[in-house]
Length: 112
Image (cartoon, rainbow, N blue to C red; front, side, top):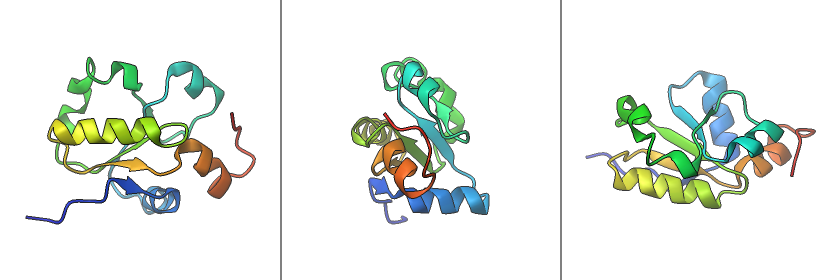
């Protein structure tokens, strides 16, 4: 059995995975109005308020590495924990959310 991943992953590690073309599912669990303000293009919008109803959209990703982000990391931590309870053992929250991404990875990106 492999060692479980930590619950959180930092922004720089996520950026490195994107740059390397590593396969993983990148989810934005913020609401649509927040996504309209600013978004990371590679992340798929799946709001926390809809994830239970739309969990089937992730059926093919049960064994995949999933990284969830929100604004600051609180909601994504709850979503990642919930996904793990549903059997998505490799779900992680991106620490600091899109706000930390804007500070570390894309300075100049809109912040709210």
